[in-house]
Length: 194
Image 1 (cartoon, one colour):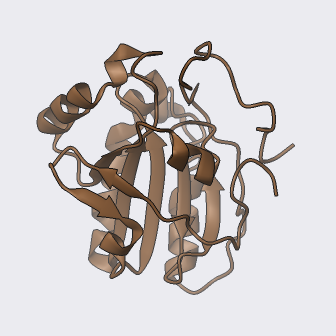
Image 2 (spheres, rainbow, N blue to C red):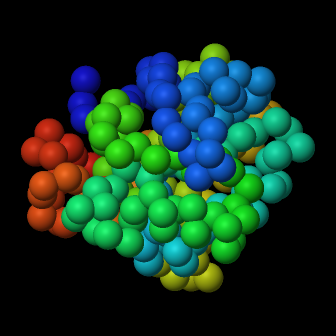
């Protein structure tokens, strides 16, 4: 097994605090027909520039019982802007339609194999991974994007079709690992598509 979850693998469980004061696990979303778990943060320009596009997807697919769950695993010691307090402020300011979880230990980022922010993981009703990678193919400049691979995968999943592209490379800033240079990547991490 590589660093990142592969299609067909089960979603690892978690128990993480959210900006709304509650604690969530995988079972908290057991009623969802499909679940998008994405690793994100407060500061990364790829996240900040594309969050409204992610909002549009979350709102578009909500009537079909698709839930979006955001996870911030970045070390606040490496990047102070990614602190939990700043997560709370960001949610208060933007009112995003998802739960925003804090993975302070970074154990969940390791369990999923999060590479960048944003990095999306789409799970089916049985919580098997059907797609992982990017959403937009230009999250830094979303208006120049020519594809939304996450949206395509969601449409295929909900219509009962096979996922034509189950893997893409996530595009964004590296996850900020505790005690490491901001550009460090785990040595076993690698591109999903070569």
